[in-house]
Image 1: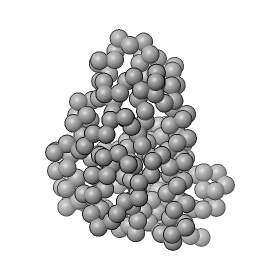
Image 2: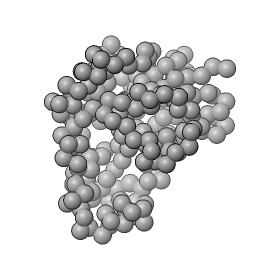
Image 3: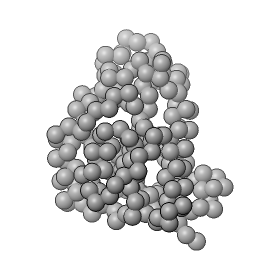
Image 4: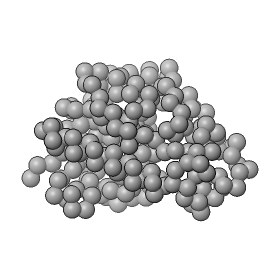
Length: 201
């Protein structure tokens, strides 16, 4: 039975990552200089997957990562793969938000929707729709193996919602420039939305 290989890779490091700021879909920040250097070292010293197509979140940090890791490919941008909308928390650190009761409720899981932002449910649904766009495009164009450059939070939500083995969201974290390889078997995916994680990048 035909299967499709898809490699989910987190974008490179940004200054916002170093600062510990919540940077979602409303801040189109670039990679930091050290982030670009780290990706180049990974590219030189790591064998990234051999792919026949490339997809990315439209955010600059993902597009820049795609250009470093897979320079020979033109990436298809998938709008639904953008990072979470952090609303009122955007651009702030946990320390700056510690006195905010809404942040405390959201961080503890009591509040699902960020004020003026996105809910966890909405985010998960959107990311799954974005992934489905990738799968559908691969099938329609006869592609077998793809890389998808996306955001750490997006990878976590997609895998916690759809992947086997089953794990909690926080167990699907990934470092910058790294991620997970999954198999999509059409019959299983179309009947239950399940994808299979088979390797760590």
